[in-house]
Amino acid sequence: MRTLRADELDEDFFVYHEAAELSSVKGIIDDVRQRGDQAVLEYTRRFDGADISRIPVERAELQTAYDRVEANTIDALKRAAENIQRFCEIQKKQFKDFTVELQPGVFTGQRVIPIHRVGVYVPGGRYPLVSTLLMCAVPAKVAGVEELAVCSPPGLDGSIHPVILAAAGIVGIEEIYKIGGVQAIAALAYGTESVKAADKIVGPGNKYVTQAKKEVFGKVGIDLIAGPTEVLIIADESANAEILAADLLAQAEHDEDAKSILVTTSRYLVREVNNQVRRQLEHLNTAETARTSVERNGLIILVENLDEAVTLANRKAPEHLQLQIDDPARIIPRLTNYGSLFVGKLAAEVLGDYSSGINHTLPTNTTARYRGGLGVLDFLKFQTILNVTAEGFDSIGPVAQTLANAEGLDGHGKSIEIRMTNK
Image (tube, rainbow, N blue to C red):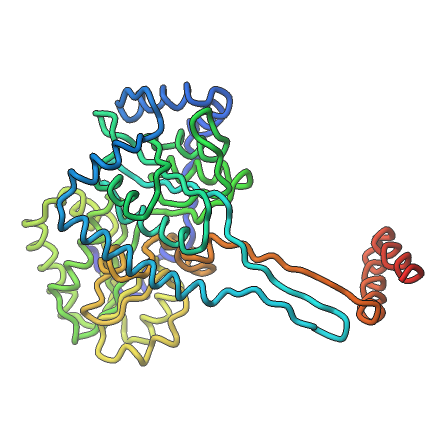
């Protein structure tokens, strides 16, 4: 891994990076919009190598898949789903309907209503990211989303990986489609003969899926634009080099473009973590991807003190921020930009990926500056209500009329004026 001092970092390290336009994406979306199922089936053959005759997964396939998955995996899926549900239920309690009389005769309120229909995209490819299904579907269920549809790419045999189908069954989702990529996002956005259009699409994917979500935004809502995954670990001399290396490689094995960053005050750790990364790569089944990732994007940044580390982390706004330091409570209040925070050597980021209950769908590419991870909030609408008595109108009506006149919107002003004579 490359090593730099903090003052040697280029400004490019801290900025949002625009993804390159992929010229084929718009064309695929338009084709699916116009030709529906036929286009979806053709792109599935072309990109996934799967010749399927039916897009929806049949109920019998769900049971067959469930029976094929090992019992300990089923148990782990259930326990992870339970923890996610518990956390989401606590989140939901923070959002309530209310009515309040702001001033005499002016009654304002809020209703918290779930989105009606949500499409969940679950990546397949090299790894069946079953955890994505749990992280997206469980918050939606807790929020009260009435209709949930899952899309996931089929393998060469035309079926979705059984562990994904088993997880869908555990969560209680029966509407599942054997499609992935841009064609899945287009189908969820615009609908086809087999797929009903959604109101919002959630779930990460590759660069084609990401651009497709950007293209359909407006027609439907989306969760966030996910870039390559990233971790930034702040460590001092108290940290364990073996654990640090393992966490850096756990992130690196996701993708060759993943970013694994260590920020440390210890020159000893600079040397020892590099040694541990080399040793652990020798025994990692995903070493080819992880090695390319750390060689291309891996970085160890030497800082003078933890104050400098805090400043750096807040500017970088990483997806995952880990603290492996002696007294984390001292700096936590000053850390403001991150997707999720992991405190202490036992709080592995991997626990956030799977079993702790917090969500792993998180902002990347500096976007943690303005939002956090996926949660119940992403599946709720906050709708305001106004009810005004004559007393209240006499108080706030003239204010509105004055401001309408200041903006030059005569019709707005007359809307108030007419009410003044017709109370």
